[in-house]
Image (cartoon, rainbow, N blue to C red):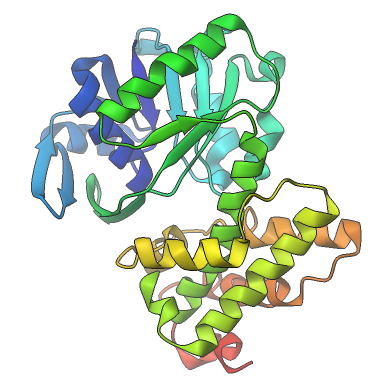
Length: 322
């Protein structure tokens, strides 16, 4: 089974190192930037955890047309880069290729069409905590769980591929499972992202620091409850109390720096539209009020438009005062 991970960000490098440790040279990393791919091939991918630091000589390739066929592709690019990434990956997409989407939010659910995609779509959600320290250098900041599944009925070949991937993920140290209702699992992860990502970016803090004051806990709960109301309006299955589940993730990934705060600190675009933005848009369609999410979207967009401004500067901190 040949596996490729697309995108050398925090989550992509985490999955690449873990799968390389289990599958060896049957796995590789794809980066659309040739110069960065060359640097990563020279440097290796550096993985830090509480057990120490390891360096992995994972092949990093940049030209999909020159890459031999792969069985499974993990897409770990940002939601706003996904369409461009799929165009870039076209030479590797075949009807027998299993393309597993690992984006935040729910905007990527639009790609659940094998005929248009050119590959078989599968979806995954992961609570693994990964922090990017530098290009190709990550810290595994919180142990989580990865859940995979299909949004619609797929071929026997595709279901067998996904089933055969599971023991490899588990061997790699990534606790994983399959689900018959990945849609509900994606919404469960969305609740967590809604409550943590933008708020940590505004507060300029780790996940765990959101638990340290009643003010941030109240803000977190308000954001998640609005998302829960939107989910109820769509009859989305909800397994656990979304607020309590989000607080639990804050605790279990207490040292992790959320992907949105990492983006803000590195002056990159954020995924606010795919996360809180999705709640706001669907809420408007269903006449469900989402004032807290609307407010924090505006704050994040203000920071996005102000490169070089630290997120805890007073001029961008009106949300903290409300």
